Image 1 (cartoon, protein in one colour):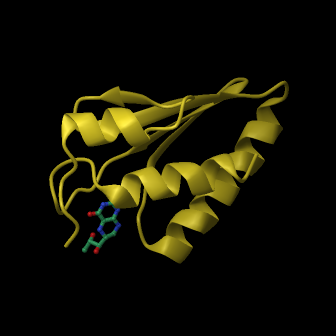
Image 2 (cartoon, rainbow, N blue to C red):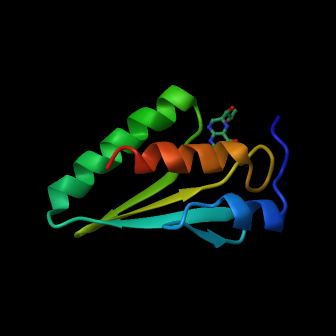
Length: 91
Ligand SMILES: C[C@H](O)[C@H](O)[C@H]1CNC2=NC(N)=NC(=O)C2=N1
């Protein structure tokens, strides 16, 4: 089980395009076309399954919102920060 990160650790390590929202980190990715967002969400799902750490993904017109938290730990851990970087690499 991973350790929960402190506020300072999260602030220091969170990617610049991500935000903290309580016990979650969140990024809204923007796309010109709806289906580009759908394809991105599918690639995020593939990575999540490979890493067995799963985000909440919301697909909207021209944007995809991705939220991460570590449910078992009850907050934000290194797993969340690592997955955020991996998702960004899917762009
Ligand atoms: C049993 C538990 O659901 C699994 O070990 C995995 C599945 N995917 C998961 N995803 C996330 N975001 N947090 C978890 O704690 C988690 N646990």
